[in-house]
Length: 168
Image (cartoon, rainbow, N blue to C red; front, side):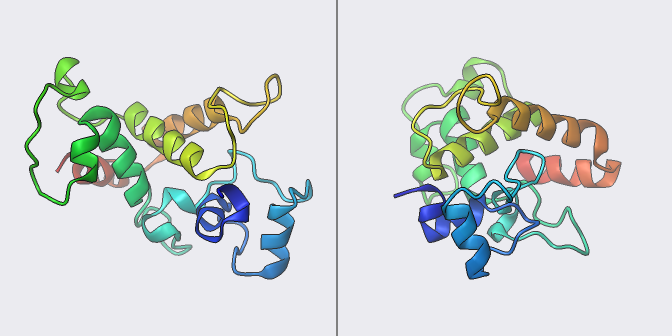
């Protein structure tokens, strides 16, 4: 069971503008009530460390959720690294990042990992661009929105801190 029918998944998929702990909100999301806007423009709890944004400091924990980090590690360094408890696990073959000369994280890589984490939590059975022309959540628009925000709308200090954290 995934998506809004699962309590932990539903909390992370819930837009920050709604309170998942309120029964009326949770039930409305579970029955796909069109009155609630769950579009890519209402960012999800998933995008913050511990699944909760700080209304007083929006960037605290932003894009530092463990599931997003694990998705990035899985894709770019391999499943052994993503699932390892070790600081520097032993790998047996070249990982995707090494093959492509990727030495630092990019906005696109973070956004892609966030998309994968969302898909893994959702009840959607097919991963695709989504949106109005095809069924499913609008992953393409979500990806583009995240990149635009990271590259153009974050303050310089918040941007630098985010990339420093990811590249440690």
